[in-house]
Every structure is written in structure tokens, then in C-alpha cells.
Length: 298
Image 1 (cartoon, rainbow, N blue to C red):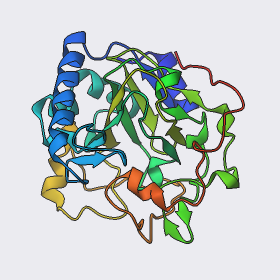
Image 2: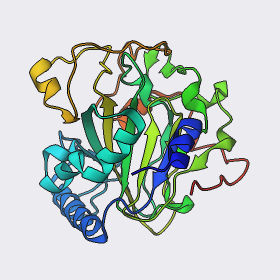
Image 3: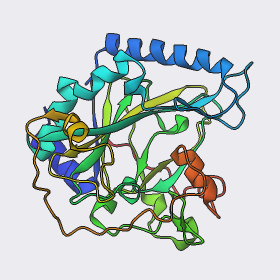
């Protein structure tokens, strides 16, 4: 599925864009299902097990910023967990043995979609090794104006940064510490039906959607089968092994010399990364203008 150049780019940058993974028909079905979910949010007044709402949400103007665990709520989303082209991409990166983790659908509606501050996914769920990645399914064309993922190239090979404020996990890096050169970020842009793949340790974020175009990104989290969560799997080994999507499970975790920082004490605001990040003291995307326009990943 991947070319040698794409694999090398992933290893060097920490992220890639793979075009034309979903067909136009598949992408159109995902958009219709998502629009139905947003319409049903008119009856919701606060966050639920399914919906994470924008602060400006009202019944007359439903504003959803995340659908939680969408694969549990509709078969169109669930089908992507084992989509053969997505699994083929991951097999090219890690080999045959792959386990699913979870999913979320981040919606950045035209003109108001919320930012996600700089962070590493690794800060939320460290494992015994770092063969983990999030696959982003583009339901809309992604361009610089509508808030695409921004990734700091090469950051997946560096340290795990502090994601705490006042000693409490907040799910974001403090921009005042200048852990990274944020102006060096590259946007993961592409046409609807493309996917992004970003490494679990890659520093990334996304600006608000200031355009007139929606930006809906379905994120599927995967890991190599021998990567085991350091905080455990309370649901038990049977359910853990049911998450296998390719190859065979193993009882032998692979231990790698990778940096780890635990997300403890837990964030004061729970429910989603948006809620976690309310514990930040300083925000980047509210106050900092990039020094230059990043160049798109092809």
C-alpha cells in the first residue's frame, strides 16, 4: 500500500498523508451519517457519552466538536476499524500484528470549529513501546484555512514533553516553555477520502476553523499488538484481544527504550481533550500568530 518513499517520510517526519484511501461513495456516506448525528444534537444540552459540544452550542444552532467512540454508535464508522486499505498502511509500517484502540470524530464546523492545543498523544496513553499511531480519515477537503492537523516534523524522535499545569495533567504543552519550534509545523492537507497517519509521539495541534468550509476528521487509534498500555487495560484480556484487527495477539509485550511521563494526577476536567485542556494556563492558538505559513505535506 505504501511506497518506500512514504515509509521513509513517516519515519523522518512522524506523519504522512495517503491520498484516495476511501472512495467518494464511502466518504459521502460518512458525511451523511455525521450530519444526522449533528442534527440529533439539537436535543442535547450538555456533554454526553456520545457528544462533546462547543461552548456556543444551542438547540437552535447545534454545534458538536466531537462524537465520542463513533465506531460504537454507527456501522459506517465501525467499518473503518478494519478497512482493508487502512490496515494495509499500518502493516507496511509495523508488520502484520495490529490492535485497535479507540476512535473519535473531531468536527470543526465552518467559522467556529475549536482549536486543539499542542500535545503528544503519547502523553495520554504511554505503552511499552511506541509503535502507535492515529489514522485520520478526511471527510472533507483539508486546507490551511479550515484547521488541518499541524505536526512538528521529527518531534516523534524527541522527548515526551510536560503536559501538566500546576502539577496536574492538562493534556497540552505550555507554549511559554517553547519546547518546540512551533513555526516549523507542517499541515497535513489533502482531499476528502485521504488519510493522515501521525506517530503517537509527534507533537501536533490544530488552529480554529476560520473558513467557510467544514473540517471533519475521524481519528482511529491503532497500536502494534506487542505494545501494551502502561496504565493497564481494566476491561480484561479477553476484550483486549478482541481489539485485534490483523495478525495474532501476544502475551509478550515488547519493551522499548522510549521516554515516558504518566498523565497523573488526572486532568481536573474530564470527557475529552477539549475539556482536559481547559486546565491550561496559557494557550497558543488564541494568542500566537505563526511566524510563517507552513508548507503542505504532499
